[in-house]
Image 1 (spheres, rainbow, N blue to C red):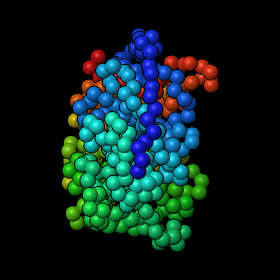
Image 2: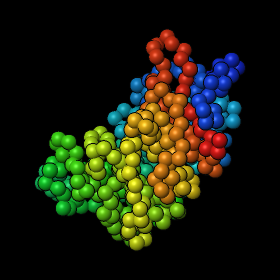
Image 3: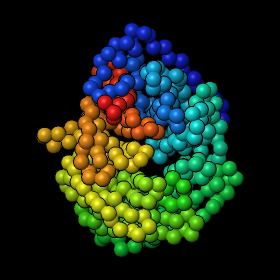
Length: 388
């Protein structure tokens, strides 16, 4: 694949100084201080392994992949790359994994691609994932693809995952889920909502929600959460009442399952007014604890490296919830411990730094320009200091 187009960006000293002197309370730095072209839709964000830079990925209205790379200490944008046309490739499956401080692996319409963060050079590592929903293992050496087969109306639908060895382009194992005991009202199929790997890549978790032709089902039977053993292919189901967002904690010993009011673009499978999070013991298949909130946990969530905290888009306040805020919660108690405000739109992306000291929150670029000629101060990404 040819190199991604490089776009130079000049940030004046005055712009940078003005942006940093107007930081919201608790913010460490603001990234994105120039009048960018409106129209980018955020899809992924992460810190580099050394915590010194932030990588942001989005898709503009022309369906082109855009990558931005910031220095956290100086708040300067290092470079920006504009790449391939995503076409019909689903944005929710446009993900990446930073493998070192200079490169990342990302899924794209062309397959799994390796991008050099310094030059923008990119090559397709394998076309196995071309045009398919896929997820990258923690070490970047395996990729999981997803497809469905059969007829939902005839109740013969099955879900198929395939785990591939990236380097050898070789299939490791097939995993098949047969939809059984499906609620009668689930006449519109099932939607895969989350996939998560354990850090060692030996287990992965999946979740589906059953869909009705009207509002989404409001019963515990409206979803499926499964654990998969990579070595044996064995599937173990969890009787989880929440499952729109999945995250492994404690090195893979526990699994956090979260749900919310707007899971799947409809009402919650749990409750019409509350979100729920459950923490499960992976080995024993038992629920350890659960808690609820008025904040929608079906949106973006991020967990700190040690799993003691998680961040959400939206925060509790005296009137219920503040959708444009960022909240930090205790994973042990479910209590909100911090609230940050400063964005003028709903947060789409969240990421903790590797040391857990910083939290980055990002919105869609299109949200911070009031009109085409307005040089409104950009708020693409705010980085919060959790130790302040």
